[in-house]
Length: 196
Image (cartoon, rainbow, N blue to C red; front, side, top):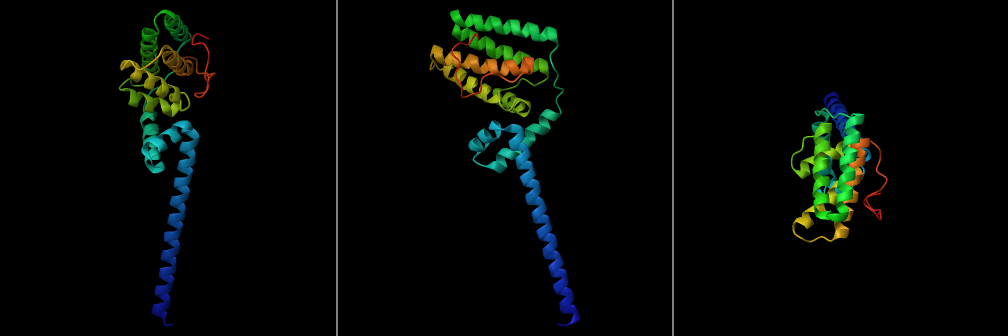
């Protein structure tokens, strides 16, 4: 083998090694990114993968959400604000006994008010849910469920039991936004009374 051929072979081997190193780095980086997003978003990650039909598209959306919410100035509520909102929530739950339809509407409006107070932009539902999913990936599932019921309610396709479930879902998000505590009820669990 002459010197020029040897040099070409060495350059080719170095090029192949560099390309393999870049591929391994990219795969490793993508895997770390996926693990980060799965860990941070939990059930929201799975929901979005199912909705988009692609982990890559879901991850791109979730990364975009993270970047968007990082620009917000999210604040905690003061003890006085927490107390005021807790009182307003209590009234909405009590209203449910006599007027479930209005109670659900008031609960939704109260949540929008709390979100806005905390520093989340209150635009359309999809954007609110996307923004909330960054910091509240578990309870945003409750928000999706409640919103689905509210949409069916607008078409007169709900029962009082459906509305009660909406209140339970709204309560889970309300608790986390107002008190910062984890909700007592996972999405798949049913509670017997909305006013508990």
